[in-house]
Length: 98
Image 1: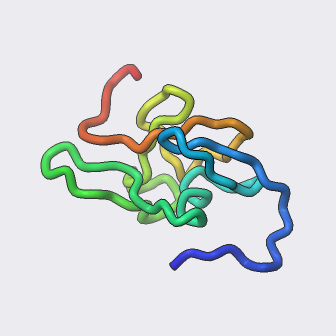
Image 2: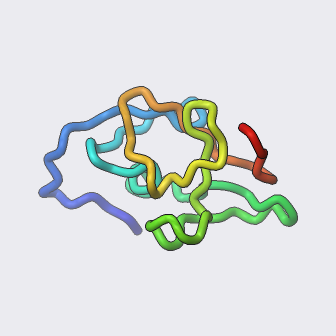
Image 3: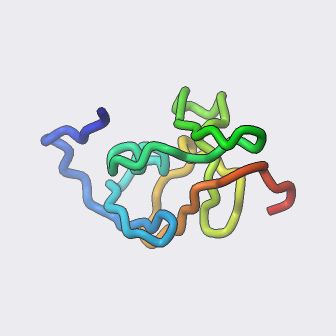
């Protein structure tokens, strides 16, 4: 569903999602990079375990929460990718103070 333009010539950076290497583009947000790579699920809800996807892509809905470099509850749609970034898909409830 989401595909990069053939005209996108920005330099690539490599991030790791749950240990797997993903190619991103300089200037992408974490959510945009994951959508472009085909990985769309960002987290599972605490009550039902239902998968959640980025919805608004502007920091309002909180459906894109991920753990980035060991810090949980980060809004993937607001965080730009960086070379070697470690991203984990959150499962269950959000942890306070992590």
